[in-house]
Length: 542
Image (cartoon, rainbow, N blue to C red; front, side, top):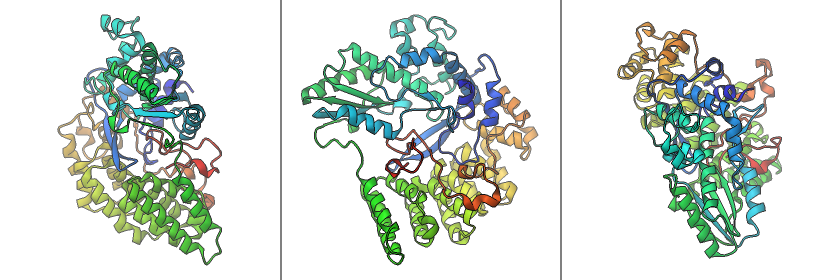
């Protein structure tokens, strides 16, 4: 598949959205467009999602005009861009086209990164670790042509149509897609991986120009950098030079994550083995011992997550459970752990939603009455806070389980959340799970916006689905108008979890897992793909 089409069909959405969101039809439509279609400034739809460590990250569902032009530019210049990436001797994050994956491109996985760190850095006594502060959100768009063509050439020729300084076009596309702002690039689309790697590679080359590693070993993965050195002084010198290289692109290191270690440098986490061994011990115990030992192992995981402030530990535990037989055989002991995780750690809600929906579809024995107040409490809390990731996944679970959402909770979601949460909510109206009066509340959100702004997905869905008074809706954007007239949509309420793909309903009972193989590559040390056959518990997503 051509890179342009792949970026638009499979690399458009932020990762780890519920399966109800899809851009396959929209991608086909945009891929057929030619030339540049960006016009006046537009804005992306924000998607506020949880990140490992009880933090948050705002992803962007970029406007279709921006998506098309980014994909067109990268496809047009992909050979030149790939050649530029090859100049860096340090990078493990050059995007690679996925031929048969669920995303357009991939970068080195967590397991590949850990193997490379161990192989390259083990001979050194000192390890310096740093990363670029708020990398995606801080990239200066004008620095993109600087990175490729050099600052002098880029400043001498600023025309977007320049053939000599062709990266000016990419700079213009990025700025137009974020209302003219020159700071930041969108987090979420696979196309942004190319932009980030352009800057990362240029920093590597600038570092080499400033004297390079000189007896040190360097590894970079997106914005994370490790330096192996034989002496503390060498580590400090290399770190200083790399920081100066970063600063030449209007960026800086994250001071709180910058340190030099010696024998205490952790090449890998120890806790995954601790948790997996405890669960395996429970699985292999006699039948009467399994419940107690299972509860103890899950309590260990929960207390470890709480003590370390690391909700990724619970996601690892949930995936490990999903790959074992325990959710089937010991559901009565696993289910309370799911409830507790979702209530206390919002970052686990996507996994919990997958598991309970799987249980309902594959085993038909989920106690929906018990889960209903939990899901509604989650919607009330996260809807009030504007936490799109938790809201979208909880609404997905409510949709599949047939849980009615009260008006007060629905109104809070419309008032505080972004377009994707609102679409998820309105999509439940056709099943009678949300009262139709919510359309009146949602319509007020559209009054001060157009389809050029952050609610563009809502305008598209409203018009395409013929929701109340759709014919009176002025989109003020020709491309969204054209897409809506073609019936294009990014939301399909009938979509089931990916693990049920290619299965007929009568065969759902044979589906043994709830969580698909690959989730996300955006979080540091989190949710990386298992490149093997899925049976090796050493590299599970978390």
